[in-house]
Image 1 (cartoon, rainbow, N blue to C red):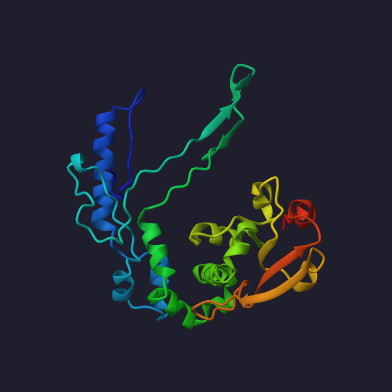
Image 2 (cartoon, rainbow, N blue to C red):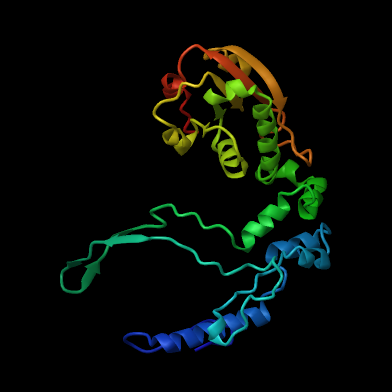
Length: 290
């Protein structure tokens, strides 16, 4: 049953009737879509209360509780014809694993320690409404990002500042790569100092050479053999690179469209040649788990 708070309640012993469960679930979805979807989120209410945004601005950006799209055959309105900023109920794929070891202590006590593993094959799920919102917020015309940058929130919350500027970083590194002579592009790699830089280059980059980073698990994803003659380096100081390369030239400086002084802002982009030892030989000493 659906109680007065909209909670789905399953009653009675034994197996759940699938058809009945689907009906109740659809009732719950309809209740949510009617009373919650389209309203400001708690975070949105805080933005309005602090005069950072108006309600109509947030709603125009789609910064509201999303409509839950149900199956077209369920009798409830589906997502066809709705604006793109609503969260689309695209299919997700994941494999979870749960192991348990039940045992009894005497006649009345049963213990069951267990371990659960979620998304054990690390499937990536992209393409829903959140991806469209991220593309919008990360664009040069992102009204939301511009307003938040102007508010100065990033000065107090560095984690907010570190969310932005990644497409800019990729564009700047791409420009450095494209300026290399064609004859020098056959043996090039990109070395990033942290997983944020490497992840941005992998996600947003197109037509770039292989990207590696010795930071956290990115360390283990590097190829076994790495001996490029030219390395585009992001995030390291010249003095440190001088222990690995004989020729180091600064080719750019990382900035972002909003002037947010985040962790990446102002870092140099280097072109490093004449390696003193192959990159795969230097790899163990570059390893960083911080």
